[in-house]
Image (tube, rainbow over all chains, first blue to last red; front, side, top):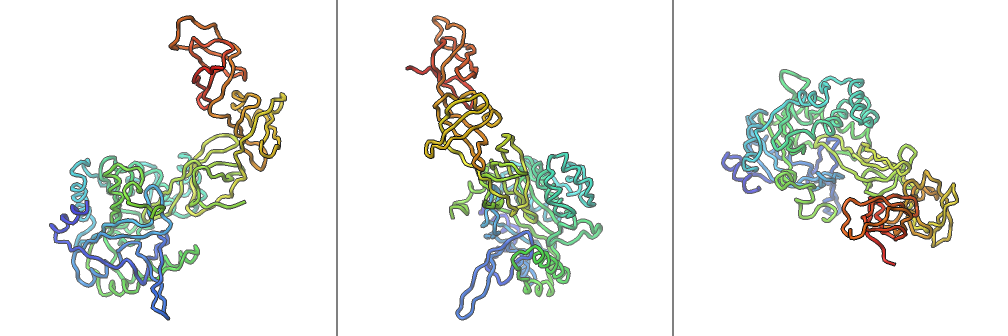
Length: 305
Length: 189
């Protein structure tokens, strides 16, 4: 698999890069918990963070003029272990300069066709709003607590009502995870694009419709395999999102995140117009090998590491 | 009592949910890459035996339940209660029909079984996987039939009715799987 990926990108003149796993700064996403480590140079000790993804470092390279790049590396997310999660896992992440989201989706389809030897059915592309309505009958872009709650009750998921309350993004996470995602991509690649703005993360907003973002997610057999964006390049907007997320972390008593000032400086310097995506290689192996749990495709999962 | 977070939910863990003691059967971690983590948990209510599915936000916690499985000897039935004894402490416990449930069909005096205690009171009774019981009533055996075929009903000393092969006769002792209620073999004295 790794070899095929490297050939795929070599043929397209995408440069393989390697960036540090340890960084002075962390992601601010309140949904991602990081690992920390200490860099000891007595009498000094500096707190370092293990990356939750190579995104920031790769964007700094892009800003410095690297052109299109890819990387295969480890990423670390604290507290995530389960049938589809291991706190240390392998990411394939790549960025294409001057690609919009549709062009990136074309390339994702080509790569999967190669990785699966053409065994997948024709890929499906569907917008978040359409697929959400298809399986829930609800409007993903306009929150109605009444409608969402009524649906949850019907589906015997009443826990959602107390967990999600008035939080639209949380409702979407809940209903998408349990009512939509399991149906996506039966033996086919399913690309869901146009995520609601409250689920934008590091994507830019759609130029025509500010309710949706230029974000895509990749699924096969109900398993989430990757996440991509038409990248946000506005340093100011990025800074605002960092601050908002740091504020949420504070309110929820989460560990303090360190804003990546070097990324912000690089964005200010100018991130070229680009789209990028990260795929979980362990999960792709799971689908290829028809494995029930991620530990089947790891040499040693976290409980045996 | 200890408090357990969703990360500690393991199969077999006993917790309190809606004021009832429950056992975790299965715990699945569900998390979108860029979203909230949840735990989808399959839980058995130990009072009613019903299995339900519940969802928690990861990191939420529930109080543990003081539930213990204890090997005990079944002593006797006084009509209202069945009596059990812990052979280590010689402490005796009584349980009514609601607690004993279907286990009552397989309990023979002096047999060992598992009594589940909640706050030191019997919550459920589980018979051994295999019990040996005498047939008190069945149609006469058919000579020459040694294979089984369709079988016939047989009533056991405890009141349970199981299907047995045609060659098995009244007053014989048979071995039964209590989990399925199926006949296993005859027991030679």
